Amino acid sequence: ASMHTASHLSALAAPQPEVDAESKIEGGQATIEALLAAGRYSEAADLACHLSHACLRAGLHLKSVQVLHLLARIYNQAGSPIGALPYVMSCRSLCNSLHLELEAAAATVT
Image (cartoon, rainbow, N blue to C red; front, side, top):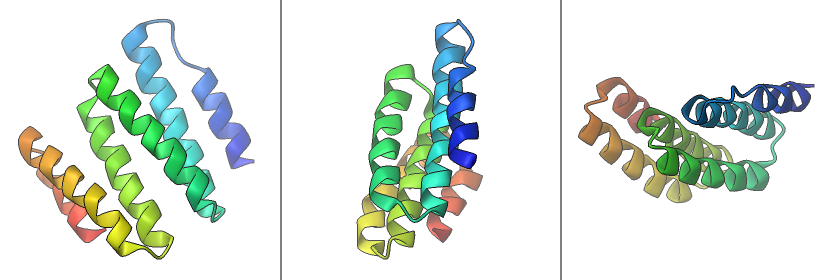
């Protein structure tokens, strides 16, 4: 049910390019959360990597931070904290450059 809802959220994107990109990324994040809850780590990581690149292309820095944090959570929950480390470091680095202290703290806790 959550996968179905997430796909509908992705489809509701507005026609404006910047709104469209952000809406699709939010829908993708919801899909990743559903995959993560189902224990489908490989699929969640693949989609998160795709979303991370989409965030960078669209210039959505806060979304990029959120997706990097999500990638770290995926690897951590999959039992690979070492695999999570590059995403935690990238997330913290981006947070520092954007002066996002709260997000940096969340990445550290992951």
